[in-house]
Image 1 (cartoon, one colour):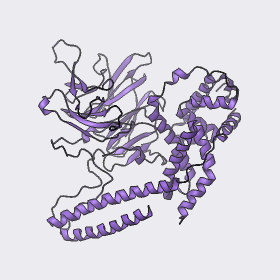
Image 2 (cartoon, one colour):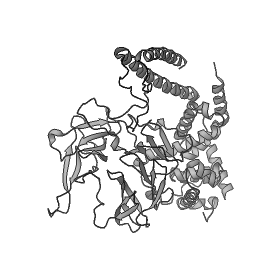
Image 3 (cartoon, one colour):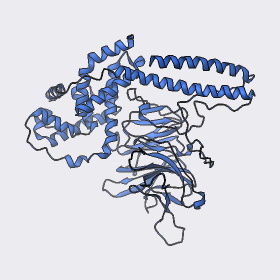
Length: 388
Length: 165
C-alpha cells in the first residue's frame, strides 16, 4: 500500500517543479544586514544618549540608560512572527521566566518579557492563555496531544501540569482565561453530550470547581473585584460591551449591560473588541480590530477605562499595533500604570540596547569610551551599508 | 565577488531545488503557494546560513513544514469548515493522480504534512513526530485519520491507500 501511495505522490510532485527566485541569497543576506544595521543604529543612538547625558551632567549618580533587558519585564513594542526562527528546533524547557505575549498556531510561541526573544515549543495549541503576571501559560488543542487535558506550564520552574479537566471527563474547550490573580484558570466549553459546561481550575491547589450554577459560564473577563465583566463584542461595535454584576439582594439574576464608547475619531466605523485582561481595577486591556481600510490594518491593543468610572476619568490609549492574528494572550500586569501623559511608553523596544549601568569613578572615562564606541559604530554601520 | 557562503548556498539550491519544490507542492497543493513556501524557507536559510550551512536541507524542510501550517492557520478563518466537504467528490475525473491531488487538497495541512512526511519523505513515525513537534501517538492517529478521510473523499483511492486504513 505505502509503495503505491509513494509512487503516486512522487508522480504527482513531479508535475510541479519550478526554480526558486535566484535572488534568495541576496534578499536573505540583505534582511540579515538590515537587522544588524538596525540593531547597531539603535545601539548607537542609545550610546549617543549616554555620551550626551554623561557629557552634560558629568555626575556619577545619573540615571541609567534604558537597558536591553528589562528587569521585571515589559510588553514588546511589536509582535512579529518574522522575528521567530521557524527553522530552529523546538525548545523543551518551559523554565524561560516571565513571558509577555503568547501566540498560538503551529507550535506555542512565547515572547520573553525581559529580553523580547521568541521561545517556540512543539505543541499544538488551538487555545492559549498567558496568565496576567506572565508566569503561567495554559493551552489546549482539540487535535493535538491529549485533547482531554488542559496543559499548564509554570514558566518559573518549567513544570507542566496536564490537567484532566471536567473532573477527568474531558470535552471540547472553547475558551481559556485567567482570573486577575493568575492562580485560577477558567475553561469554558462543552462536554461529550454537547452541553455547555465551565469550571475554574485553581492551579495552586490544584483543584477544579465545576460550574454548578452558572457562576463561571458567562463570557468575558471579570475585573479584579468582580464588579464588572468585560465582554467580547459581537462583530464591529462603536462601544465596548460590559456587564455590571447586580448587587446582592437586588433580585436581579442577570448582569446589567453597560458599554463604553470607542473614540469615534479613531474608529468611525467601530471595531471588534476582544478583552484580554484587566491592567488594574479600572482599566481593561483589549484587542481592538477595526474594519480593514486604507489607513488601518490589523488589530492593536488598547487600554481603556471601565464604564463604571465617571466619564470625566475615561482614558483610551492604543499601543502595540499590527498584531498578528496568532497573538491572542498578553501578560496584562506588564501594562504600566497610566500617568495621564499621552507620550507615556507602555511598551519597550527590545531591538534597542545600551551600555549597562555603572557605578564607576566618574562620567568622563565613560563619555570618552562612548565617543570611541560611537566612532567605531559609525564606521561599522557605514561598512555594513556599503556591503548591503 | 562571490563568497564561500554564497557559493555554498547556490550549490545547495541548485542541487536541492527540484526536491524542495516537489515537497512544497505536496504540502500546499498549489503551485504559487509552493513557490512562496520554498522562497520563504530559503530566505530564512540565507539569513541563518552561518549557523545551518552544515545541514541546510533539514533546516529548510523544517521551515517549510512549520511555515505551511502557520500560513494555513492564518488563512483558515476565511475557510469553510471541513464538514461541508465530507461528501465524496463527483466522479467526473477518473485519473487517479488528479483524484489524489484533489483529495489531498481537502485534508487539513497537518494531515497532509504528516502524510507527506510519512509516505513521500519516508520518515518513520518517530522522525515525523520529532520534526513536527508532536507525539508519536498523535502522528499515528493523524495518519490513520488522514488515510480514512481520503477513503471517504475518494472511495476509488481505497486500493491505493489500503482498505483498512
